[in-house]
Length: 188
Image 1 (cartoon, helix red, strand yellow):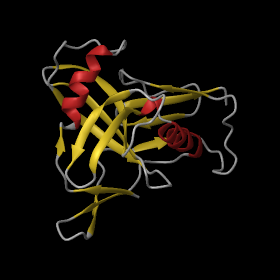
Image 2 (cartoon, rainbow, N blue to C red; image 1 turned 90 degrees about the vertical axis):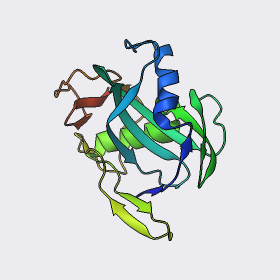
Image 3 (cartoon, rainbow, N blue to C red; image 1 turned 180 degrees about the vertical axis):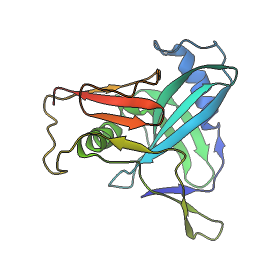
């Protein structure tokens, strides 16, 4: 279960991504993009410590859709690629990372792909602290059929699709959505 809070982020997620995206080698949009969210989904961290969200964004004037997975942490993570920091009005300072470099996200993504998993159900806390179900902005599904306790992780290669081309096919297990393939696993 992904637990969300009614909160303000300063700077916001799209602002952080607008500053970070132009420096990525796979990005081909404007140097100073104004971004819009096309879709989003979350995975659940079993330990409840790390926020795991994938945003699909594009420049408001069009162009390709970019897959930008993010993790939200309450402390710095050595070795991970920092997107930026933000102040969460409920949780305090958050370090926002490119989730491709965060082991908690990589494990959640690999597990979803290989076991046929889906996005996490979402709940948002209202002003009284009551949890209210929220419909995710998009659905994803892993195409693998491994049992959760028997995942072949030793020699697998995880490939995150960063620029969507609408491809719906994959040679191996993949994470798919209405936008096409979002990630693939090789070597399974």
